[in-house]
Length: 71
Image 1 (cartoon, one colour):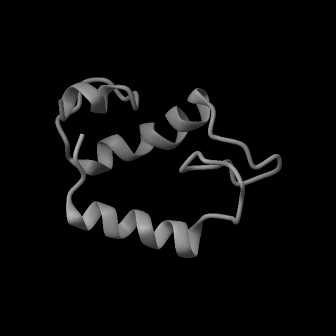
Image 2: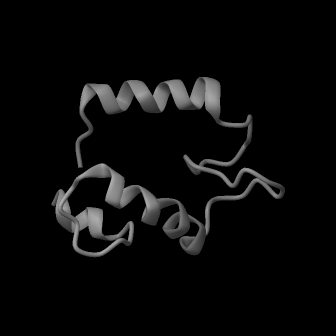
Image 3: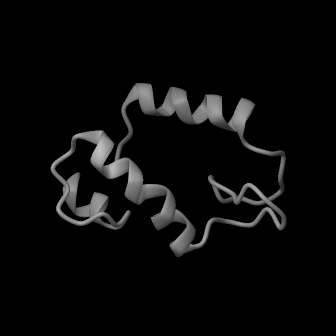
């Protein structure tokens, strides 16, 4: 899925300023040790409270839903 320029800019900023230095290739890492990739349950916990605030008409509050929403 192509990303908009604004999204690319935000991701670059995150990689420079927000993400801990790591040899891991995953984009988003856990914020506590071990700094591994986020688990499915961790990602869901982060995603759920933000769905309602987003205003997007998403029926289910699971990250996987975004694949179908924007697909």
